[in-house]
Image (cartoon, rainbow, N blue to C red; front, side, top):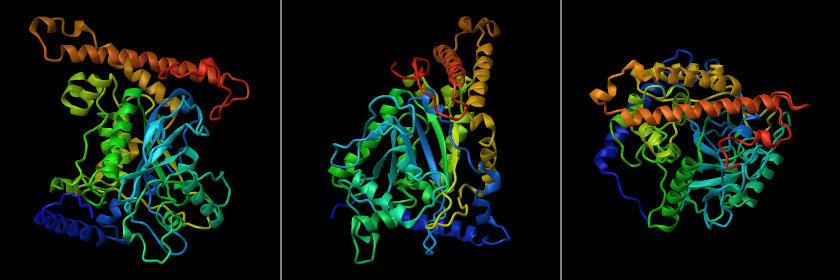
Length: 463
């Protein structure tokens, strides 16, 4: 049996003790009386109940990543998942590699302008019971989110079972091995595994979950780095000597999705299997990462090149890719659990975790992400156009005419930053013009797809 390198026993004892204390403090507040645990739960009134993405978005942006946090599931037979839900990433422009012997990604063929395109993208989802790989790859936007269920169509057990078979037929579990403990039942078939542990978790998310995604458009080099990181990770497990052993604190679903984005300098990574006392107060929790990425896309380092230079990931993103994650097109998407529903309960339940001294941070970020500038396409583009104009207006050598005489450590980064902001200003103006042309197409009102011509080819794409 292959084994992973072990964490020192004393450290694990400390981790367990601290975790028990934290959870005990939280659980003692359950019920109507409030308490710490109730404060960890995101309230429906504090979030956007539903914000479906504008179909025009996929016309304008050829590549993007979505970090999605999904709420706790609870079926009508009484089974339920953990209260902190699950995290995964959906990547437009990355597709399932059908020729690979285990789950890997490849670049999609062409530039998809609709989520109906089978070459639109794929989801990457870590599983607790996976053994020889860290994650599975689920192809297709509709299979990932809606489970190919139309709005208003009833979710029946028959539809759920058919969706399970569709995922199996598409090779989602090809080459995947599981740990033995996933069931105590006699039925150890793949169908039983997918029905119990994967549908509504890795795909068909809206069957049983509320879905919250923070979306950031990325250029091709960033997309390639994310794909390379994920492929390397699964290859190491599939061909190496170590099994993947999911761990709540040290190596859960959040570690992979966060570190995949960190590989492209979107933010700092969370090292797996390195548990520290500080990490206990900044736990890898799905809802936290949705909020963190949404806040980064909306209000991260952008205007001050000295701040960017002092922030390691932002500095490297600007220098390596001429790109920053705080930008136009960074939006939040929220989808409700499907109704009518014969299989799962549809009440809301999603938690975030942070230090008791910083409880207001998440609530403040959620309020920020309710702003139309960060949830609606056109207000977002207009907001960032104005922001780029404001930044460019401050980049005037006359503000400090002696900077070159005295010398400054920021001369090069300031010049790179100025060029980048100018390019973003030109790009967002082009996107607004494309929206204007789109809206002028007869029979294509806002929020509906329209026939595409040369006018709608994305500025970020190859042509």
